[in-house]
Length: 135
Image 1 (cartoon, rainbow, N blue to C red):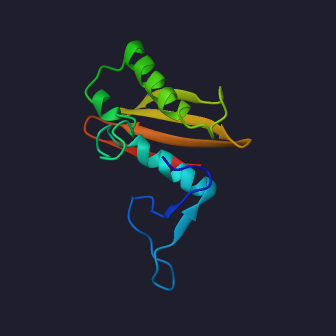
Image 2 (image 1 turned 45 degrees about the horizontal axis):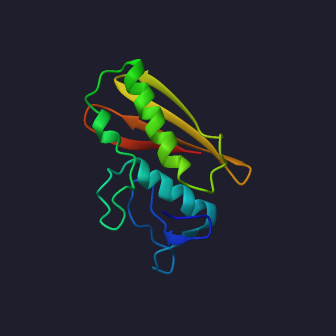
Image 3 (image 1 turned 135 degrees about the vertical axis):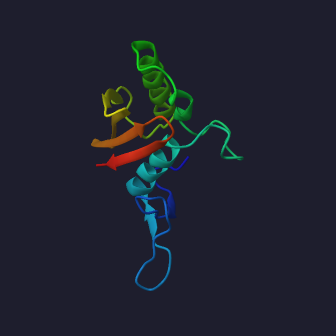
């Protein structure tokens, strides 16, 4: 897990390497790196990262699930538990709203880091999990 004082290669919105004007791969650090790491964890299954088998939200498990209160509760608790492991996130600031739009289950996730509200939107359709937007 990346923390607030880490640095990583900056990825594009489509998870591709970006390129600086001089040809180098630009880096992201601090809060940008931290939020990029959360975005990556949101679309990852536990076990995909060989050196951290518990990393990943594991939302693929819910792709073929019924949209009911129990499924929404399971998703909410999973995301809260995963984000709650990060000491940089203010305890009690995690909020998950789930809505259905055009056969897409949308998770609007907000949390606070160092007094700054962050948000990420994740979409689950019948075959895919993806980060839709990031504010």
